[in-house]
Image (tube, rainbow, N blue to C red; front, side, top):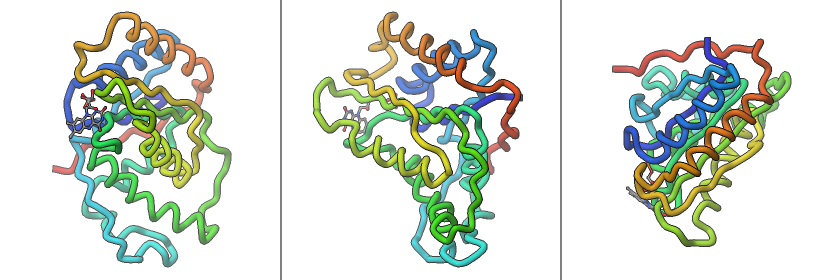
Length: 206
Ligand SMILES: Cc1cc2nc3c(=O)[nH]c(=O)nc-3n(C[C@H](O)[C@H](O)[C@H](O)COP(=O)(O)O)c2cc1C
């Protein structure tokens, strides 16, 4: 039973953010923390259409039975440790991940209506953002804000982020950076209570 989740938000399998996230998972495993990876690209996530359905109780998305978003959101809400890993695309998040973020509108609506009860926020919510360009003052700004408000809709607070630039592909990940990621995983694992496992995620819709 895993103790946390790593959402792989890149459409590219085994790309930069996948590789860095796995190094983080290796570090966490060294401390006995078992993390499950969830490659978003293998799931079906439809875009929010702003139909307004979730604004009314029970704040359920009208698309909930049509794709995997609801099950993924539930798993993200429950994970004692959560890492959101993604590349930067045009100064923003990749489209499918943004679709998932937008589907958290049902959670936002429930919280607005005070229908959602929060019984202790899960402690560790992390983001790992990877960009090809070495420069750009605002390279991560929009994505970081987007993920922090996404997490808030899920009843979590972003606790720490890594913003890595100048990485076009996994071959740009130098051994020192690998060490930094492993060490991050080890340190974050130390702040999670091992007694609280995550309910298993379901397989993607075919
Ligand atoms: C559609 C697209 C848009 C991109 N936009 C940016 C960008 O705005 N800034 C940047 O620094 N890198 C940009 N990149 C480069 C990626 O962020 C970089 O290659 C990253 O390492 C990809 O991570 P991944 O392998 O985990 O997908 C873009 C790549 C693609 C495919």
